[in-house]
Image (cartoon, rainbow, N blue to C red; front, side, top):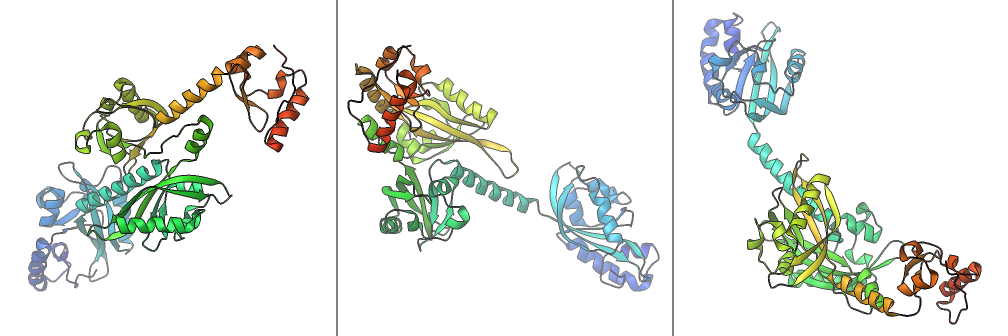
Length: 467
């Protein structure tokens, strides 16, 4: 900038005899008043960085009076983690480069770190000589804090979504997919980029039924346990139950549908194998502070504990289990290792009912990577355990040797009668070749192959070779 421009640095130039004193006095007073009334910190330095002017807002923002900083290096307000930044700024300014809206950190007199947005310009004498730099600094600490909170909230929400084992999806009023989590990508075999903006109903064996489902959500506000079958890109089918509700903007306007799918394929297979029905249910979800206090829960947690959300919040997570110490040890492991998988616990309902669950949990972080707490999802396995015990009892009650064989001919399970007739323990039988325990291994191999080809064999003669 030239000295004949309307700039507060006339004060410095006049002091150096670089302006006409009579001509500058009036302008200097006017400009000084303008500078002192600014909400922004405004100060100037010599080419070497020595402070030679300092307005009232600079005192308010940085905490130093003009007398305290006049004649001192502007490094007095520099951040110790950025030792070369101030020197680089002066170098660029000396080359005639103007710096606009440069955000960085500075240190107040009281040691507080603040965020500032800087605009810096070179100062030139009328002769064209570079004589210093002018700094305009705006305190953006509060704005940065608001932005940080917004980023943390967004990341918190994203980690909750991605931590879910259930496929989650958001759908527009037109039935288009607007967002998905990793579980949805896995269950459809389609990438996030290819899923976004396509019809939600395209990924089901019954598209019309899927379309009717999300329309019901817009009409009623929610659906629960809505049955659909997802078709993977490679043809695999997955039976799911959808629970969905509308979501709104801050003004209450409906923006779309949030839908969570519960994979019930395994439950169906277990039901056929064990001749019992396993009920599908929503997973209880909970967030836990580093002190072990509950900070948030979902409706499934309320149902499984029988305790209202208001009473759960701020209480000890471990209080709701039959083994509090084991529960406490579980979330501590998450903080130490970053996660736990299939961690077994038993939840006690306030009326005394017990629910066996497997917890999958991980830490969640803010935008800077700091650990804020633990997010934990519990899968209710009570019905599965009962079904497994029932099936095991049927198998062990048989006097006949019973065995299950994989497609590769490996033994996957046996009963006690098999262990007795072979003279080999269950542990040693599992994962070995079925055919190894017969006097004619090739004939035994041919037998189970026939089963895979025909679906069954009857009265197939073999001789077990006892070990």
